[in-house]
Amino acid sequence: MGELIQTDPHGFRIDWLTLIIAGLILFNGLPFLAPILMKIGWEGPGRGLYFVYGFFCHQMAQRSFFLFGPQGFQMYPLTSLPVDASGGNVELVLRQFLGSPDLGWKVAWSDRMVTMYLTPLLAAVVYAIARRRGAVSPLPLWAFLLLLLPMALDGGTHMISDLISGIGNGFRDSNAWLADLTGNLFPSSFYKGDSLGSFNSMMRLFSGLTFGIAVVWLLFPWLDTDLAVKTNEPAQL
Image 1 (cartoon, rainbow, N blue to C red):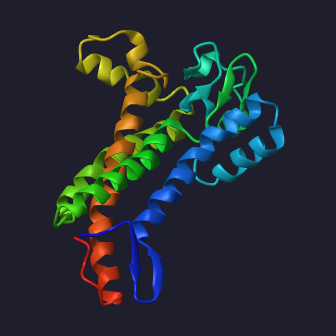
Image 2: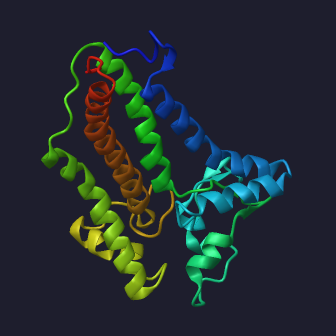
């Protein structure tokens, strides 16, 4: 059975999974530190975190969580943000808007990224527990691809919608097709926009969740076996 912290004849050694879990804790925590730094007035370090995480995410404000707003934790529809969404650089404007004392400060990556990277952390902890109890088999390729499908469909249709009609004006912003499909069963806020609780928000969270599970359960068992072979140790499966 695999141990997270091990010793060997050459001395103390930390298991690879421990390092990954520690790295994921740091990687997931820093985007939430950015709005905290902005709130307490440490804008330099806060803006530095937004800049770094801008390489991993579009950071558009209408698809991001905000901390320290009127509700404490919330999202804002595009129409509620104090930005000019009529120009040609809408994505850049939404990316550059970090928040304000009245609205709060956005997390340094979007709602999809929150689940996309938090899920591997949680799945890694579950995997660490599961491999202590016996063999952990990797996902079959068909299951891996099936779990990636929500990300491909949701992300792909968002990209097409934004490219064709512009951010805030596409078929994934109104979701009129879904309203017709469901007979307008749900409130209009469910179909329109990106606010928390909307169809778009739920799909981004769900697709990030399935993506994280797919990656961990395909790669981690393989890593256990591969690293055990390279170090001439029993596989931690």
